[in-house]
Length: 475
Image 1 (cartoon, one colour):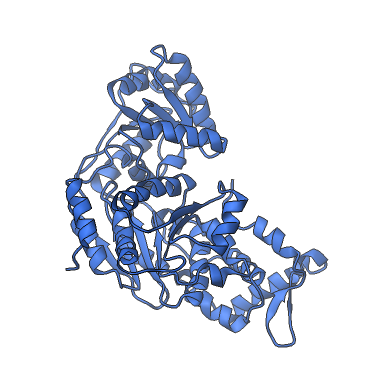
Image 2 (tube, helix red, strand yellow; image 1 turned 60 degrees about the vertical axis):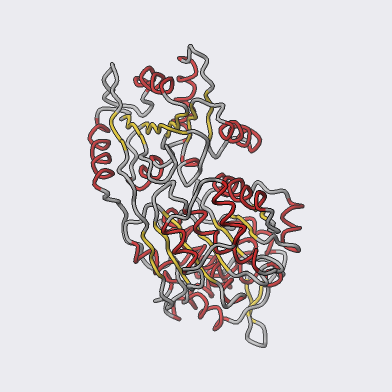
């Protein structure tokens, strides 16, 4: 068993803490090429993922970027930065931590490419953008570890496929790169491990103690749900009463529009002038940061929110979750429930509110699934070709490339392990000519092959357009 350095042991003792078993195991297995940790919300997954990095940077000097942290949400990256900065500052560790998202200024992003921090916190889209620059090799020189948080949320969409393709590029630049995945809700650990690891490398799966079952019920209301509609306005008196009885309540909605309407009606009924706010991805950045800062201080009694707060974020003294409307996804409901009593071995508390009578059945089914530990999810198919085409163009933005080398890199991503050369060549041809439908249009002929066999952008000015359209999020 690997012992903590004295400085770390003293810091844990001063806070009255000790390492959880899965945190110790993560430290012991720090040299594994790929490692997936599945631990309950509030179980210290983030510290478990970063502990080997902090110890390594303390024991030996490191120039440049050491660890890259990837989050599905900008708000989660900002929260991790706050939580990670505390132990670094209190122990006086010589470690620089920065985040890089769409909210970061141009000057900061430019500086980070030339002078990267020891730990960089970012999103899949920002990572893809970083790999598109000519100086990517310099930016990532010395990179040792990649930590992918809430990996289940990325694995369910094309964002995960794009991330894994970006990691193949990083692996080519940094051959000894280690990969760590963190999640609380994985219905098929083997599938996630296959997706995350470099093919055909193995990926160890570490299962932590799941902790106590959540306290989840249906919210009792005086008025019955309507036969139709998605606003759940009938529940506002009961919701307000729950807000009064708890320290901080997160009120989740499935869409931004529903959140806005519910917040408006809740505010009108708020006769006690309780401090209530709203948080979602379309809010102005300054407004989002203001709400987040107020939450951290514990000054809000309730926050009406969407998926921007349902992953891994630890906000103040949240002790109740209310889900308005059928959750539609059991894993997402489990994540949201975990925001309450976000501590190890502390049961989370949640209430479900059906928006209409037909959703009562859905809510009951979701409640029973959570209590049984049954998570939903469909098996992922092979890596999508449109994401591969985008990756080919991103690679071309960074400079000329060899098609054989790129094909080998792509096949090292789990989702593309079975990709045939015929299909790869078809994607390459589409990027070069626009395919049969677009080859008549000059703007879609974006690649050309040089006499030495390497491929490059036909017009270097196209790099700016490609970078502006990086990503797979559909809004």
